[in-house]
Amino acid sequence: MANHVSAYLSVHSISEEGQKVWDEYVVGTLEKSRTPNDYEVHLGHFLFKCDKETGEFTDWDFNTMCEEVGAKWAYATDWDEGGMATYSAWGPIGGLAEKIAKKIGEVDPSVGLVLTYEDEFPNFVGVCTYNKDGEDVDNTLEWEELREIMCNDDEELAKLWDEEKEEWADEDAAYDIMCDIQWDVIHDWQADNTEWSIV
Image 1 (cartoon, rainbow, N blue to C red):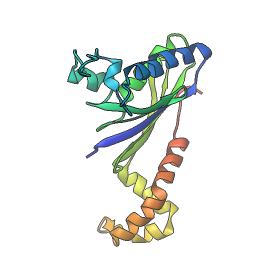
Image 2: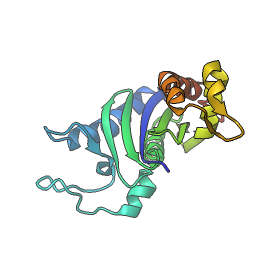
Image 3: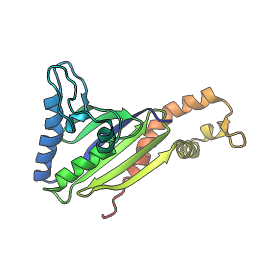
């Protein structure tokens, strides 16, 4: 079962007018919502009103957060004119990414955003593209598929997998190897599987 999911929403293609919307809506909302002691900003600020004194949302709604952002809680940890890094509960911030893409799409019909995401285990990883109409193509890789790719890429790791028992013959040795190669394999897979329905 997934827990924290890290994601990065990047600007792939954008016009000058579209960039203005990103800067005002995404960067502007996050900068305006951050207090001097904050290193992260709750993404509920894109949806709800916040009491500046208490820092609490006054019209918070759990279902709206899940539907419009994509997770029951989510935070941005870094952002600029080219992207936004986030972490969230159970799933990526697909709903918010779609909302942002559609908003930019009102002035920039050729906008393209890319969301890469990884569960912390990782139980799953993925990459999703967005255009003016919202979500375009979402490709997800489950843990078993990721393990298979890593075994295909690393002969030593492959020898440690017991296909019959469906477990590692030496779990510690396998995890040591995966610690070295796992994230490179994930990022390569995400790059290779960033797809658009219309090229």
